[in-house]
Each structure stands twice: as C-alpha cells, then as structure tokens.
Length: 299
Ligand SMILES: Cc1cc2nc3c(=O)[nH]c(=O)nc-3n(C[C@H](O)[C@H](O)[C@H](O)COP(=O)(O)OP(=O)(O)OC[C@H]3O[C@@H](n4cnc5c(N)ncnc54)[C@H](O)[C@@H]3O)c2cc1C
Image 1 (cartoon, rainbow, N blue to C red):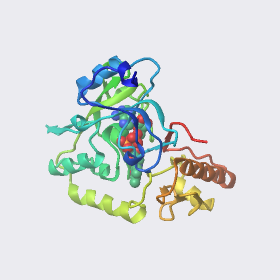
Image 2: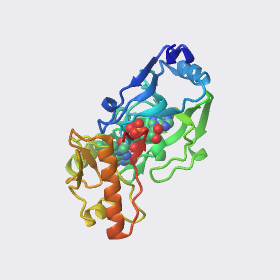
Image 3: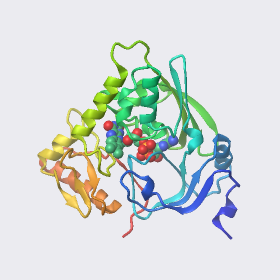
Image 4: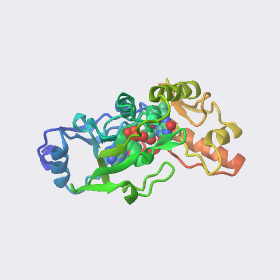
C-alpha cells in the first residue's frame, strides 16, 4: 500500500521524499516527507480538509529565510504554485497571490506608477513568506502597505484578516503557524514626488554594493537587537570570515552566512551557534536567529 492511498485525490503535485535543497536559497537540506503543490485554491481546500491524522503541515515560500536540516521535514510541505502567482491592480490596490515574488510585485508597482513598494525589490522571498516574517529593509516593512490578507487554516477553512487584526512587529507578524497565507491586498501610493524606478534601482545598487548577493545565503542570519546592528556585534566579536565546513561568515556583510558550495545544513547551523556564542561572550548580547531552522538533523 502506498502512502498516497491515505491522501485525497488531488489535481496538483503530490510527491514523496521530495528534494527541497534545490529549491532553497542556501542550497542545502533534506527532503519533505510529502510535498504538495496545489493546482489552485479548491485543490488546496479539498486536500487540507482530508489530510490524514498524524501529518503535520508546513507552508514554505521561496525558501529564502529557512534552513532545512539534513534529515528533512516530517509530514507535509505545501508550496504554492502558478495559480497563486497572479497580480491584479485596480484603483491603487494590488491583489497579489501569496506565491508572487516580492521583486515581481515591485516591478508591477513601477509599471503601474504606484509608490511605496520599492523596498520589495530587495527581498528575494514570496509575498506569503514576507508577510509571515514581516520582511522589510531600508526603513519599510511589508505590513506598512498591507490592507488585508486571505489565509487557509490547516483544517481547510478560508479566512480573511485586516492588517489591524494582526500584531506585526520587527521581523515578526504574529500570524499563527496554523495559517497558510494565500492572497494579500496592498495599497500603492499615487502621485509620489520621486521617480519610482530610480528609487528601486538605487535599492538594487546599495544591496549589490553591501551584500554578497551572488552567494548562496538566507540574508541576515540574526535579528538586530534593540538599538544595535547584528553585523556590528559580529564584527566586534571577531567572527568575520569564521568557518564551519563549507559555511562561512561573509567578509562583505558579516550578518550573512554563506554556503561556499560544499556546506551542509549542519555546518550552517553550527556556525550560527558558534557566532552567537562568541558575540555573547564578547559583548554580553544574545543574538536571536532571523533565519528559521526546520526539520531533523542527521547525526
Ligand atoms: C540575499 C537575501 C537577502 C535578504 N534580505 C532581506 C531583507 O533585507 N529583509 C528581510 O526582511 N528579509 C530578507 N531576506 C530574507 C527573506 O527574503 C524574507 O524573510 C522573505 O520574505 C521570506 O520569504 P520566503 O517566501 O522565502 O519564505 P520562506 O523562507 O519559504 O519561509 C519563511 C517563513 O514563512 C513561512 N511561510 C512561507 N510561505 C508561507 C505562506 N504562504 N503562508 C504561511 N507561512 C508561510 C514559512 O513557514 C517560514 O516560517 C533575505 C534573503 C536573502 C536570501
């Protein structure tokens, strides 16, 4: 008997022991026990309403902020496919599928001559992942432009939330882990007094100058503690260039851990732990991970 005999018949992709490493920005990690890529919203609803007991559900986006350990993720991983990659614009409001990349939305905002979303060009994640993390940069966060979002609970109930229903903070949204974000609405600013494409290009230039954008990483490893920059503390603690196996603290931006091509997930996680310990020893400040480590380690 195949494990799939216990699952509902779906129109999307249902795969056992599915490789996640190739999909992830770090380029490492073990498989998903079961991967489901729904064909559309109805397929997702039907699937979730009929998931057999004992299978935890994890939603992932572009995997630009998660480190999956080598033992992989137990249960079901849901990735939203093409149906969730649509953008509509009307009266200054963007309706955006959760699998749309932040960069794509920034590009559509330029074409629509609507401002306020330029910072999204610097975020490699999806709209769903960015909302869950309340991702942001250069003084803006994705919740600043959010009007409302749609999500589905892991038992298959579709729900809608206004921005005020959720407790957004620095790199945290308070969106319960039980919800899979499927769609969101953002407000663009009309008649801004700057050239939107110029501001967007300026952000791309700054990031290329200051970050190892051509290396495999998940962006900032640690959150900035109140009043300090994590990279300054890491530099002060002498961790720039520190290595474990194929993982290294970037010389260019020392809050980035990069995979030189040979790192395992465990190299990356061990290096993060080593850096945080050293920072605490030297500065007395405990760094909090921004990257989310998921799944089982292989001993
Ligand atoms: C080079 C680089 C630079 C970066 N720079 C920045 C930066 O400046 N600022 C910043 O904030 N981040 C930055 N990041 C991190 C990352 O891009 C953001 O956090 C991003 O928004 C995560 O989106 P994702 O789709 O990749 O989510 P994932 O990494 O796939 O997931 C992140 C979290 O969101 C959850 N999630 C994903 N999709 C959904 C969904 N549809 N519904 C519910 N939960 C979901 C996951 O379970 C997980 O908990 C950077 C990353 C890289 C690689």
